Picture 1 (cartoon, rainbow, N blue to C red):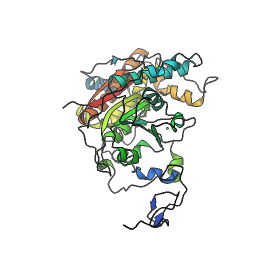
Picture 2: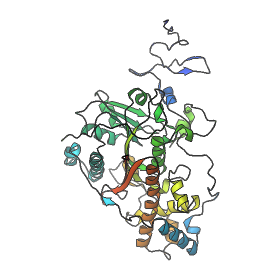
Picture 3: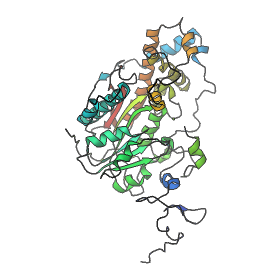
Picture 4: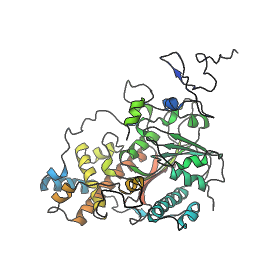
Length: 429
């Protein structure tokens, strides 16, 4: 068999990108990093499918103009609250509490050098790992996909917990570049860390080379995955290529679009083939989802187009209009407990840490307009019901995909006001 000549046309030039540029009828000439096959510009081209997880571009019942809560009459607000209470009837208003810890973080949790903010984040990481261990999601022979990875701290601690085991891989998904990434510390280890700089909205996991080559079960994780990002992640894990808008072909994002983008040891059992088919990879293997563990937050940043619970809402006699109102009302859940919002980070606190802790935001005008309608305690209760309803739509979506799913409190409210964890495991047949 004749071997193609490495001339940049028949085959890539040595040390150059292996992406074939159809328009130029040759391979890309960019130099690639050690051990990599593609340059930075074309690395995403393999798994970038525009809007694949976004949902339909046009949703029939989307209202043209959203009416702020402050512009609604008392009668309109009461009607919304009545619809909300009817929709959540039968659901427990409070979740089961399962606050855990994990030996992997014992040393860090007892390090006096850590301040209050760092300590709170460590307690959350420890409980996330403890809950994942309870679900048998921590173990070898799988790939952890951390959505909204940021610095990659959750993947870091999972790696610490499983450092004694082989065949563990990590995909860290983050749409923007992050400073002080902790995954860089693990590049010389036997564990494979790969960072994908792409919006979840455009990520086709089935086309990621690591998953094509290994065929490993995937465990989707995330800590404080804001608003619509949670829905996009669930669609990314459990959707199919059919969700991509008709007529849109696979294509890498342009440089301009990237710039415009903003927001003891434990082991689990061997993951068995998952009774769910999300489509086959190019290698002819299914994308197998072994489980989900996502800490939720920022419901007011959800979006009807991306929301995976639209069918659930419609079954409840609700639509986009009610959804939009419930999003704004959901922030009432934390506005009563949160201290007055600050306009700048406290001294000694970084901008990034400040932003992580200040997830919720409620318009002051809206709160002021409700003083004669609802007291602070009632607003907080209604806000929590809104979050519950939105999250139950996600549980419904997971159940429809063949998973057992639940919501629980994974940390106390004094550690984080956003303390709900969404979990899912393949349902036993």
